[in-house]
Length: 248
Figure 1: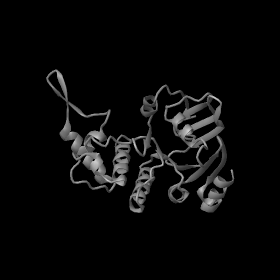
Figure 2: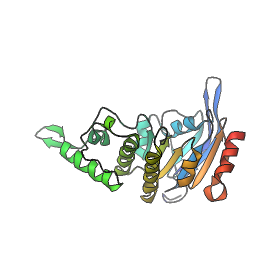
Figure 3: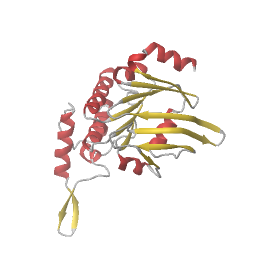
Figure 4: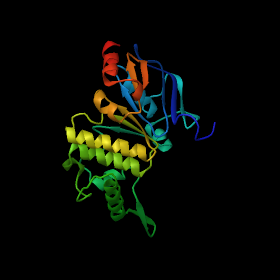
């Protein structure tokens, strides 16, 4: 199989137990290149467990993960990040007390050499973060202001622009529109669509089926640790997905 063939990521027969709790029961899941997949289901369906396995937080007890056609095993989230998988959690995608530019390059800071010493190149970090934010339509006057001064939608925009800058191959967004205004939610949806145009795939985990349906190519439904639905958007409707979530 060549690098361009098949899904970007494929999870096969994934099982996970937490003591006596059987969280995932043989789930098969895949994401194609430049595809937005909505992952939906009620509380306890297994959504969070599945994405935490894919992002390297938990190992599967049974099952295999393939990325770009190769079998992979994650010992930590860093392993997933190095492959090009990044997870954006609503509350911890950014560090609120830190400024925008430092958030943008957190863990991947730009440095400059001064004799034997490496120093942060803050000027370059400010320039690059501002350029990337403007590229996705997010205009912020001063990237040195603390992230806590931004709105919820702007914070998500910073996290998404950061992922776009580093050319992540797969973004996992966990409830990215929770507690956002209608305007901010629409901006996040626009960001995800923009990332797809850049060839970046996304998994959009949400309870808001109307939101995910508007941008998804495909919707996967989990219930009690099992996959109970996997539909191309054009082959289903919001009402059908809601009925499946409620009745499963």
